[in-house]
Amino acid sequence: DGGITQSPKYLFRKEGQNVTLSCEQNLNHDAMYWYRQDPGQGLRLIYYSQIVNDFQKGDIAEGYSVSREKKESFPLTVTSAQKNPTAFYLCASSIGAGRGYNEQFFGPGTRLTVL
Amino acid sequence: SQQGEEDPQALSIQEGENATMNCSYKTSINNLQWYRQNSGRGLVHLILIRSNEREKHSGRLRVTLDTSKKSSSLLITASRAADTASYFCATDAEETSGSRLTFGEGTQLTVNP
Image (cartoon, rainbow over all chains, first blue to last red; front, side, top):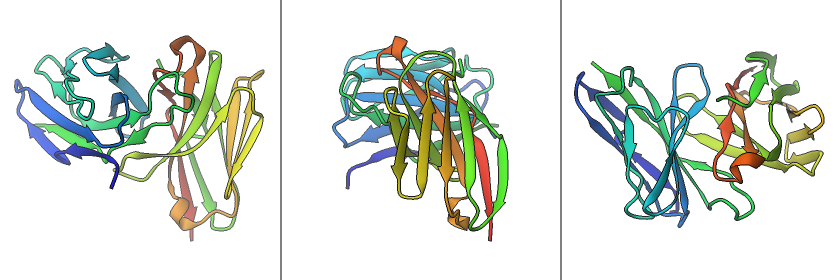
């Protein structure tokens, strides 16, 4: 089955710790995205990548880091510099910019809680 | 920056009624998309309307786009309890050349059986 997966579903972090959220897709999509969603609110873009080995900051990149070493994978690290990391994190992918339709396909999300 | 703004923030209707949600945006766009999110889940793409289109249908969904007013509406006809979810509009702005979408705050739709 083609799709996009995120792990873990729930993650608990102690203050001061870095944690890495996994995102994998087998849709052969060039573009991948990370969003943060707070309760009752919309999605805010953290980072995005249009191609392997390249990524750009979104609207709220501070305290986060990413890598894109493989087309299929786009892990997000929430660092200790992120002061309020408790949120629902969503990963998405799309065929890529300039390819016509750029609808995004979403993973099931990771809920991160800071203890 | 949140380009899309939906209204109402919340909508509660009875099964069988129609639901209309609106989205306003600020800059010129390539296309506008609507997504659905069930509680605690990822988003699911519903429909995409390009800037040169005025109306589009998909099953019980009807989307309109008015680029002069920078607004769009999503109509769900003959609603069902299973339509209960949050609905988001997302814009593909011309200035970002399709590389990203900007999502609105969403409308929470509740369909009562």
